[in-house]
Image (cartoon, rainbow, N blue to C red; front, side, top):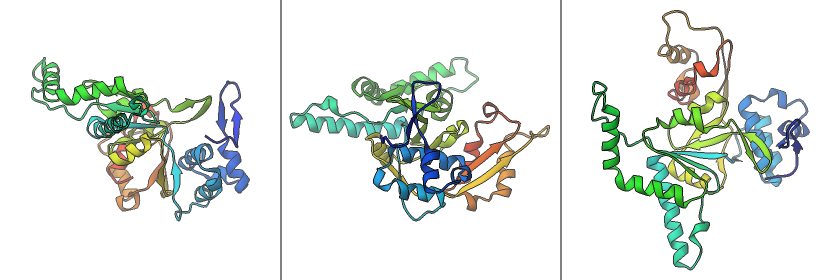
Length: 297
């Protein structure tokens, strides 16, 4: 964590990193022109980027350039049990290797908090017409995955910085949206925006809270777990403003197609959609980011 641009947060005992001051030092008036996504990325850079490369990285955001990679340090990693388990197996193997050389295996832990949600192994053998369907399906899931679940249970005891949500509690994206995201993180006396990488294509569901969340593969998630940067180039950011309310008879099923007519899928692939909602609360419409990612955003 850097020290330049660190300031007291008024009314609290916390500090924050003044991304506005850092951006304005390079180009006066530029901060007001940055979309929300770029402001969060700028704060991340000011707080964590190597000071020697900070100005060059911020310039990518200010000038909306895409010719240099810059580092991004997510605050946490969210995994489902399939890819998350694989990463933790790697860490367990690293512990064995260190122990064989006379080292202390307990020193091997994720640097970044890891939240592993067990939701990818449920198979529906009993349907909803059976009042005991949930209990029966859960029992079958436990029996079929006994060895896997035993290992996952061990990881939450053995590793620091690992939180496990056991099976039967819902899907990863619902839990992440409703329970896991603090929206504002606090670490070592510093408040900063919540950000994350997740091992599923619907990771951006939590974007509904204003949290930057990017779906990645298992290897990149493991890289972030170890405290290393996830490098990126500034994506194209497309502004979207939605106003008013649905007309009677219109449901969320109709909305993605109507929006896609205005922002074609070919224009979204690999892009970020930065939206403004008028007269609509987040709680009533948290699925909007998932609609957009179905078109590649």
